[in-house]
Length: 322
Image (tube, rainbow, N blue to C red):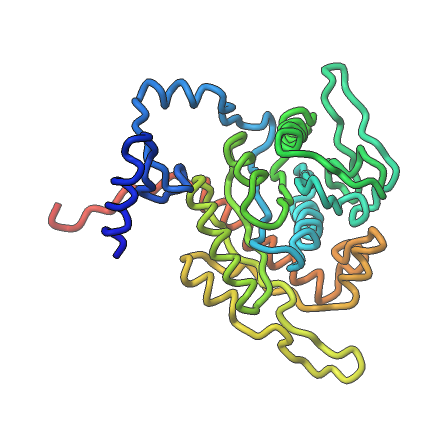
């Protein structure tokens, strides 16, 4: 039937010279036929920005999720603070890339403070809890809606990334907006990325989006460093009973499919929610508590993965017969 339909379409429209859909791909998402020459492809690629290495930044790590509401920003904030706590003198940065729903100003207690400009007209990140922070939310009123079309969003992304005067950093975490849209693609095209951390809750609907997120990272050449399973269980504050509200083991199954580790689990806890809302993240508010320990575990595993990624491949060991 498909071949018959194609023949009918070709017969009907051959006189107007339209392209019949041929093959779906990342580069040709509508499956439209193309007869571009190599020269034309080079000309079209001239407008794309060249991928840059951010000066003084050792590792750019994306914190991503396939869908909203899984605790990605909470994870990014506490991960940044935990990195600073573990690495001490090393610089840590956190860049909020969610243009339409920035949450960094609230979660990092940076209300009503606008970044200054240096002599080169680059923005100076704000610092709290030892973490260097930047967000579009620092430059617009807290209750103002950002109503921008795609080109303006992409311009903002480029300015946040390339016109922020980051100090020397061991790791710059990029808190991406949920999904697999323009911002994530633009970031991967603009700068060299060490890898991505995917955040999910255990239920199937969230895990399906993690798979899509991992597929997008693969298409843009970004290594998935691991999966964080957020809201993994709930412990009753009155009786101590635990239950897996969103199911259990889902992230481990997906991580196994992807061939990456689970960096750690984080429970549903009132303390995490309250800390985020008051601008005092739980990694600071209760550094010795079990929730902060979860983020320390994730941080340690992330640092191991970054070390593995930076190591050159080892030459094969010759056998006795060589």
